[in-house]
Length: 511
Image (cartoon, rainbow, N blue to C red; front, side):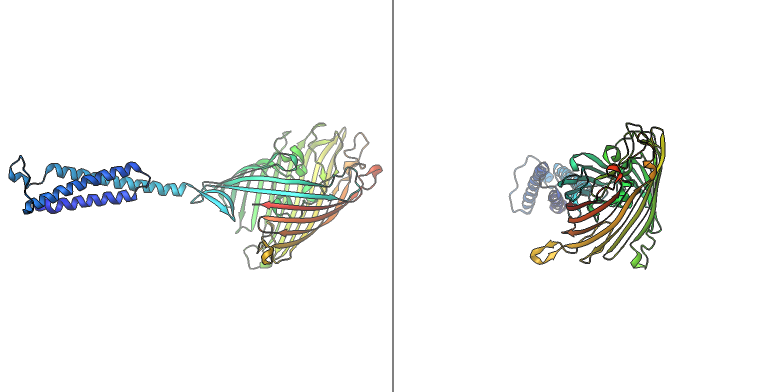
């Protein structure tokens, strides 16, 4: 046996076997086809090793030579067929190793792009490892109890009600394109509240298209999960709830100034009923909405004023209805009872404008929120055309008794409710005053032409509210609130409507 046969060929065979073993160890455990292939290679290499060992022993005289049919000198030369087979095995091992590398690279890419489950403090859903694709499942459940102490004819009975039942799907695509879909099944109805897509091109330029809250009322823009009271106050009567349209928005100066500009179908004030929720449009008129909101001391050394936000919003448009499709609102009390509505036959007929100055200030446990909304709408009934102006205002205060920070987005308790360990969550007390006034122009004219009647609609409502909010944890909140409202006119013979007094309780789960 030559030195090539004694050393090179065994070393080559051992290297091939090592590569084969390494490749096989990296292959997925469940890949039976590859395992069988490696076993076959392993068996063949062992056969070659045995032949080489016998050849070496015969060359050293330790084993008698086997009878061969070829001349003796030929036995000392390397077997060409054996060398070729070893070369083939080596090539197959290299191919197998590259296949393993490719599989590993593909597995790494799948791990990067594949979904990861989300379940914890941030909710539930799926996402990719790089957060470029995210799907989140959120939910809101609000179960209310209402108890009325009122002599107003037709007042709703004391009741339990499913105020809001809203599952939500939201997330991002390619890191910058967002989406949100929120239906609502509360109060015995089914409506689509949010259905929109976002394109976040730049902090100063973000596009939103679909159905969402137009940028007008401050308390309306506050999430229903973060409300200080069970029901919103009078100014929310004068702004849209949801509408379909397109909006651009952004922030400048280190987020100290923000803007929103949009064009919308133009729903009625308050968003009552199908027309108010904005799933369709009944006329060619459209609204343009603009809002500027500033946090002048955000990210500055004026810590006490860092939570101050001040702004103004406005809308312009033309809305035209008919005697059968009025495109006009009704106005509600905090107890969700109608205190003003237009007479049958009255309808929107011309320009509508809204103006909404607003502010809030949050500092440590203290919160203050105020807004003043004015709506002007041209209304016609028969030959009577009037420009009716309606104004509403509120001032609300909150104090987190347990020391957590107050916020426009709600309160997060430091500790969760756990009576066994003496932890009671967080407590917040709230109070507010507010009112709404309807222009006298709404009541002018004869019985056949007056837009509204003082025997069924009040021209003024004002009241106050008190409340206690108990945060069991960041997801569960229990609210208790009381609202009392007095009225000017709105009863038989033009008398004042009796005061409305209502006590609310709410159990809320939001994640």
